[in-house]
Image (cartoon, rainbow, N blue to C red; front, side):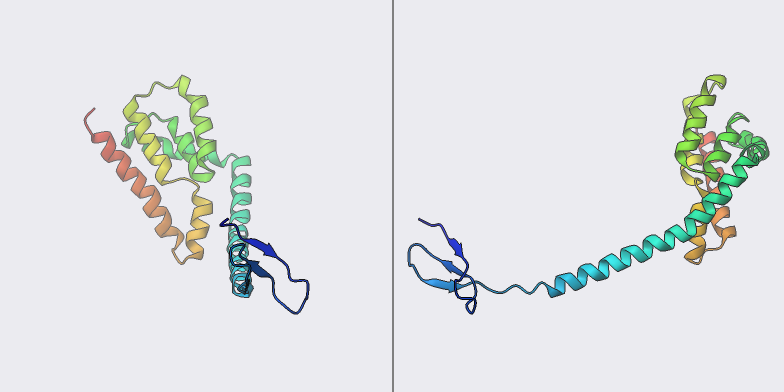
Length: 178
């Protein structure tokens, strides 16, 4: 009682029917048009693939340049150039290499380098907070800068906002009383 059985019609000319056990009357099943769903799924898939391919075209060259720069010692050079700036935000000079690696690569590389260097440096919680802030604001600059450039934002603006903004916020946090 209360069950509905679905049966395919023996005669191909009739659609499948729903037979109600109580009334034993056959009601035709409504036809479902899947074409709009297929078309929407196809458009969505094409949009996703287009966005994916656009990002790949931007990211792969940027990552290759970063890798070559890193292999040529660029991270250490940039870290040495950043070392004097670290004093402006209350950090020890060796953290310049950590910040340089994060700016050129990604968070994970910089964090791994930070944890390797941490035993040689004595840092307070406030200093780690400042370094974390620098890391969060100005990471992966080549890749994210290329994406911003494709969106119409110049490299100069991107670098000024991200590097300058992180230094400004780091300096403000350094002034915060402990």
